Image (tube, rainbow, N blue to C red; front, side, top):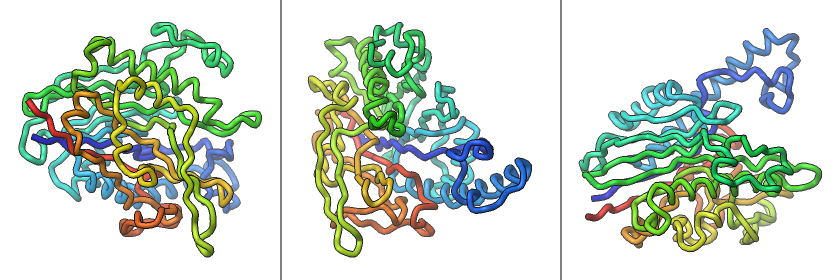
Length: 371
C-alpha cells in the first residue's frame, strides 16, 4: 500500500488583520505606502480591504498547489490557528477536491507572530487504506537548558538557557496507515533574518537552527532509542529555513540567465543527515532541480534553494529507494526565474510578484509501507 506525504509553507494563512504597519513601515504593505493616509482609523479600513482582496486570490492559488500534491497527509507551516485552517479547507480546498482533509491538528507554538505548524490528513489514502490518528505531542515547551543545548554562540545573540528551543514547535504526530505505524515530525525552524552589523542573516541565526535540529534528533532518539531509531518509520517535514546548496542566478532576461551551483560549508541540515540518521529525499532529484524557493533582493542578489524538506528515516528510505519527490511550482509568481527545461504552466491569475500560492513550493512523495 502507498501513502502520499507532503509539506508546504502556505505563507501567512491568517484569520486576523495586522495593523502594525501604521507605526512600523517595515510591516506596511507596499500598496498602502502609495497613498496619503490621514490617520490610523483610515489605515485600518484600507488594510482590511487590501488584505481581504489579496487573500482571496492567493488562497485560490494555495489550494490549487495543495490539490496538485495529491497528499494524503499534509504538513503545513505558517498557519494562524485551527479556525483559519478550517475556513481555508472548507472555503477553498473543498471546492476543488471535495471531501478531503477532515482531520486537522495544530498547537499554539512559540512564534511571536502567532504562526504555527499544522498537519491535515484524510481518513484514507487514495488506494482506500484507512489512516488512523493515534496521538499528537507538542515539544514547544523544551528549553536549551533541558536538553543541554545552550552554547556560547547562542548566548552571543541573546538566547538564554531558560528560553524555548523551537521558534514554533516540533509537532509529533503518530498515525497508522492500514495498521502500519508512521510518525511524522512537523517543523518550521528559525528564519534567517536580515544582515546584522555586516554579517549575513543566515550566519547570525545559524546557532538557533542548529539547536532546533539537535533537539529534533534528540526527540527521535529518545523516543525510539539511539541505536534503533533508524529501524523505525518516521519522517521530518517542514521549512528548515536553511540550505546546503544554492543555484546562483546571473545574467538577464534579455541576454540570457546563468545558473551556478554553490555548496555551503555548513548547514543545520548536517545535524540530521550526519551518520545516515535521515535522508533528504529531494537530493534524489538533479542538483539544479531541487529548489523550493526563489530568493531575490534585486538583480544583484538572486538564487534558488531548497528550504522545504521531507527527511526519511533509514528504514523508510530503504522501503522507498525508487521514490522521487515532486516539487509543485505552478503557484510561483512570474518573477521566479526557472532553469532551462523546468518551466511549468502557472495557475490562472498568478501575478508577476503576487498573487501566488506561496513564496515556497510544496514537496510531495509517494511512500510504500510494507509489512
